[in-house]
Figure 1 (cartoon, rainbow, N blue to C red):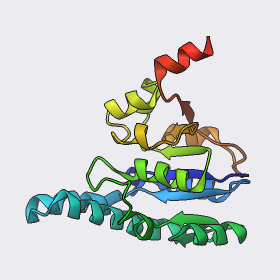
Figure 2 (figure 1 turned 120 degrees about the horizontal axis):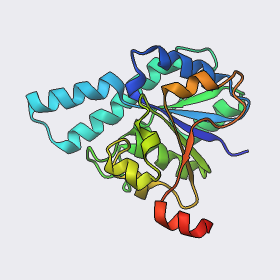
Figure 3 (figure 1 turned 45 degrees about the horizontal axis):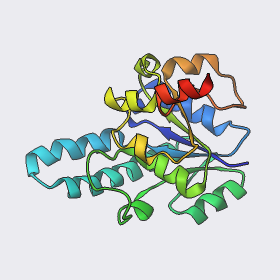
Figure 4 (figure 1 turned 45 degrees about the vertical axis):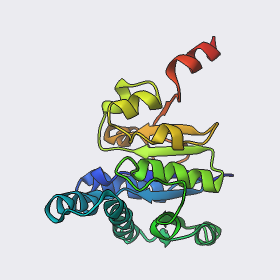
Length: 211
């Protein structure tokens, strides 16, 4: 079974939902990989950029390192979780029946197909990882319910709920699910299926194809 890639949004940091999601994902009966958001560490990069005046290229590298930091914080919150920095380490953690938390800096800082800008966030980096793993499905965990008002990835990007590069970064045929905090009250442990609402890639195209 191909693993599910789950981006755990940095916006959950400091909320009770963060630990609830960690506990739920750690209980999954199927393989999954957690991709951390940047959380308060990425917020500090944005704040410091205004004060110190460094470039977006430098800020991009710092924001990826912020994901590493949040990932380390996530991994210590449950004994099932293990940090992983490479495809081989992800495989080793899965083979040990544990749950990898991906620290992206080693794989992404010099990747030619990842533009160094604020347009790339952990949303797109999780989609990038899913492509490296040939994973079929990506789940984005957000600290908002607003995603339910939009029917396609393009609309989510236009509304700023996901980053603007995500529609292009998603692999062909990849399934995208999005979940918010209210979803937690509908799920049981152990987690046996992919939570969240499935989001179409292109609203009008897919609607016509379904007819």
